[in-house]
Length: 116
Image 1 (spheres, helix red, strand yellow):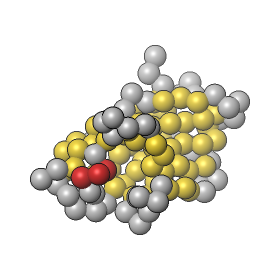
Image 2 (spheres, helix red, strand yellow):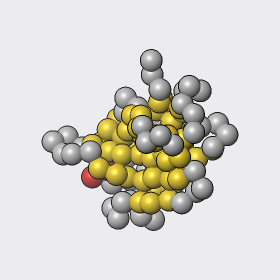
Image 3 (cartoon, one colour):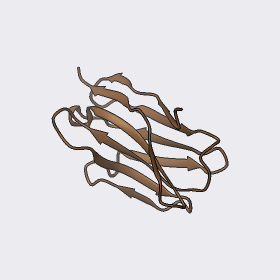
Image 4 (cartoon, helix red, strand yellow):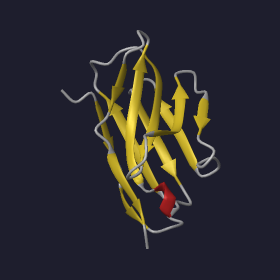
């Protein structure tokens, strides 16, 4: 059963924008933390941006000022607005959610390719 479903990836030119969205299944309750991680080919999965239930955000230095994370607690959704995209932003982007018990959930990932 898919718990987190991502959408919005694709191919974009450098300097362009994309918005990723992630929806958690209704069976996931008490989400306290959601975020986006990314994994480029041959590299480890790293944090891009996270947001707590209270709205506290955290960004990787490489995306600060370009990416904005937001969430809708009522709908169990999280979004990532990505502007001024660079080729080095190319990666598979994974949605992540952690519930109050500490259990974490991963989405299947969505590909973002920044290329001219």
